[in-house]
Amino acid sequence: MTQFNDLNLDKKVLKAVSEAGYETPTPIQAGAIPPALEGRDVLGIAQTGTGKTASFTLPMISMLHRGRARARMPRSLVLCPTRELAAQVAENFDTYAKYSKLTKALLIGGVSFKEQDALIDRGVDVLIATPGRLLDHFERGKLLLTGVQIMVVDEADRMLDMGFIPDIERIFGLTPFTRQTLFFSATMAPEIERITNTFLSAPARIEVARAATTGENIRQGVVHFKPSRRDRADKEKRALLRAMIDGEGESCTNAIIFCNRKIDVDIVAKSLIKHGYNAAPIHGDLDQSQRMKTLDGFREGNVHFLCASDVAARGLDIPAVSHVFNYDVPSHAEDYVHRIGRTGRAGRKGAAVMICSPRDQKYFEAVESLVQMTIPVMENPLGTATEAEVTSPQPEKAPEAKPKRSRSRKKAPEETATAKPAEETATSDAAVPEKKAEPAERKNRGRGRQDNNRDRVVGMGDDAPAFIRLSFSERRSS
Image 1 (spheres, helix red, strand yellow):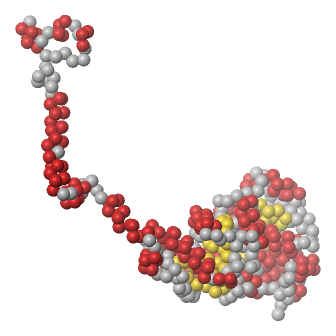
Image 2 (tube, one colour; image 1 turned 45 degrees about the vertical axis):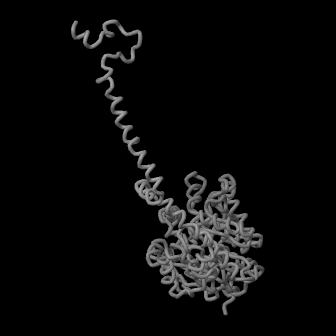
Image 3 (cartoon, rainbow, N blue to C red; image 1 turned 90 degrees about the horizontal axis):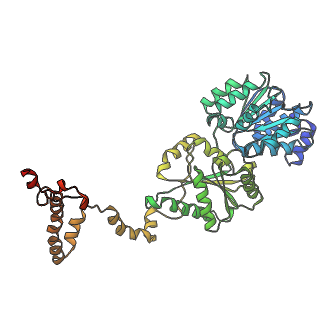
């Protein structure tokens, strides 16, 4: 079996790896590190949680241990799609470069430009950034990429598939043609792979597992959910989530709960907190300091249930996550692989359970098609929708409310006539002539000046001139 000592890594790197508790490289590490150390371009494809970050971090540190960075000209560049993944890469770099005199800078949103500019001005060996913030620094004239020797694109499919293609192409154009390029991802669709061929030159392709496969140590399941009523769907779905968490028992020590929409992340988190669960939300609209604080709390065990959007599905290396709950079926099938990859990491056992409503069926079929397996169906802990209707007292009040909402003005007289007794009907009929007489009175009032009051002067009072006060007959005789 291959050991880290067999990979020709720098001695200082090996010492840091040993102190971190690793002795045997994962298949993707054993396959990608040797060609990377040779200076070749690498295309690495492996399941989430198999150590892809170390696959480019270790050889990069080994190759950069000689040389010195110049101000505003980083020697290597790592591009990540999200702030969380970039911060995770930075943590890995700190762990493996603890005995190497290398400097780094992390360029992500939510942090002041002034602090980041100060790091770049001193010169950095490794620059870890998201594309948007990197280009912001470049456009401000604070950064030059002409000294980049090694360029890494982490989660390459996500970077390219989520609309970063123009930014990626521009960044590649700012780097030297002689750079070494490393692409790593858990999924690599054929159309995305064609794009990567533009950026890589005769790469060493390391594919240790079929693209978009899930770990065998992750127990998967799906609960098909049909609400009793449409207006109660969200409430019943949250109740189902709580029942599923309780059903896992003591084995569910902590969990990440994924939602498709940010607003649902907040709602689910508030609902769990209301019912006594230790939960917290994390999504892209939160302040960066709050996001990092929440992640640290989850790592340390102060937060047991992390309600997250897909911003947390990529690159979060939290080894001891026991469960992943997909509150929503992901709209992009590839996200399912990354979501459940947050559990069962480093050889541990994990569980991933998903809620599938009728409107999610097409997304669920896409997930099964991607992973090429039938996800086992689990029993609904709340029973069927019919049982929910029987036990819920609220639907009994619905028939009384519905006719009131649907009653129209046109039907009101008919309903009143059939419902009222004969005396009331006669009274209402007697009132009809009075209502019909009102338009006639108004009509007569409108013609009053032409008929009975044609000689009366209207509107001028006592100030009317004498010739106007003459009657119609007097004016005719004169």
